[in-house]
Length: 458
Image (cartoon, rainbow, N blue to C red; front, side, top):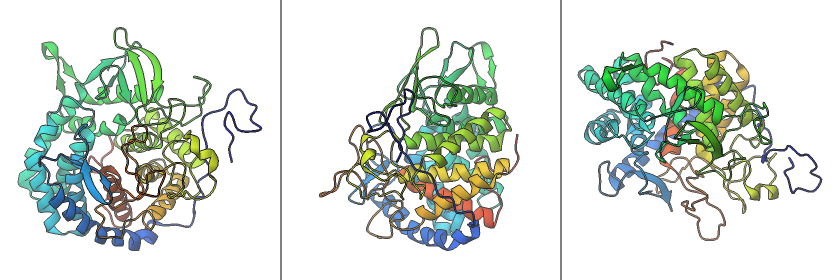
């Protein structure tokens, strides 16, 4: 077990708040080996999508479903950042199975409830909500699997979404800038790197953001500036930035002085501390940078993707399912070199982080031709696609069990007799398990699946 300050025998002056083992990569796995497991997952997924559509209809007064309590999805009045995951899940179900019922459902809800998300100026979540819906619909149209009459509508929504997201802009003292989080113009979230998909798609469609005096703001340039700020301030590279600078770890939030754009401090909203690693934030960086590398060749994207993916491999339990934060205090009581234990009495795992991370590992492996990442991604996926992580109970509306939302705020349900959250699901965890399964299926029987949908790297 790794040592931390306060652990008997610890003597170093520079040691990160990190407890973690090492992912035991299965070098013999192939994508086709997981097809039976993904097929079973899609069978389970269908009923769950319809159950949630009935209990939490998109556009209903209860708000978008966020996480489950005793197996039933509930809303959380914070932001509606999960609505696109609900609607997009139906489109993914059609994509994988060809069942027209889910295409109709996803199309109807995209047209019926997602327009407000296209023009939403108050959040950093456009890539989550709009690329998961309008973007998926566009991709299906380009593949000849959905009505081409919807293409102009979907593309207009994606153009506007990318520009609205790009307008949420704070400048930094070094001449760059970032898309600021819903916390305000001082806040750069690591999550947003994956939401930059909205800028990428809008740019690929030839769109620009029009500013004051008709200034034409290039969306790819703005995306690249945001990615550079994320890499500089939210990702660590082992270069001595502070005493907790370990290559590949991430911090959830970076704070700036909005008067002059100077960086002030690392911070976190959903992690344990600014000096440990909230693993879902790490996973967002892994997948976000890997996808952007597929879209646009960049040393920046490659370096950040490799660093974060290496950290995940080197600091995850043996089966690749991380605990919610590498510095969570209860980890000192656990064997972090063993497979993760979602039913332990000390700290929750976060399976949603694993689902996001696995796709990032797979995409990076393919993008740079390194089988180590590919095999790591397949190893994590295999764990997620079986119990105790796959929800096989039809009465449970969730698909991926043992997801965590906001541990510091205590928003996750703790069942009677348990001391930490377990056994529940999140809308983003379910969506990303579906997306991971779709990606694996496309590796076996293409075409290759990208968010920009045409297989062309820019």
